[in-house]
Image 1: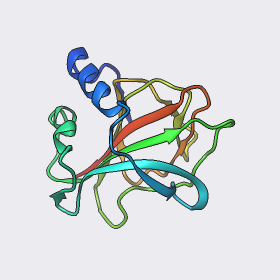
Image 2 (image 1 turned 90 degrees about the vertical axis):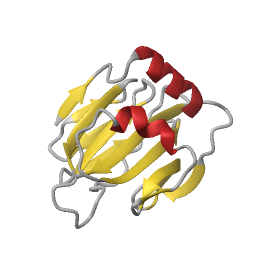
Image 3 (image 1 turned 45 degrees about the vertical axis):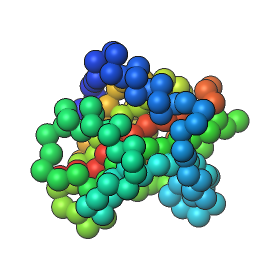
Length: 158
């Protein structure tokens, strides 16, 4: 696992953050995070199944432009709402049956939510910070209790 703070130039980051965290950004309700009835969240898929899925795909360009990849598998924005208590979602890997896949998880805001790994590593959500890890590392998202939203971009690639 590799963690890189201040991943994007401050001006580029602030512009992306302003768009993605705006009141009129199109989020789509998901009735589960990993397992049925584990929680809900909102997402916006930018790229999947070898094609652009959103007119807002350009929002990921500054981030994927700094990642060494052969192929992008999926780019998805996640938006978790504040909870009274931390909720740990199910253990998972992002790309099933994709050998050598990697994950880049970029945080748009700082909050007390985090990503937990099965080996007990814990990476808190810190704005303009990205974590890189191998897709075969099982992980779980954990909701935040201190901010209205926790927003990150999940990039799967080989």
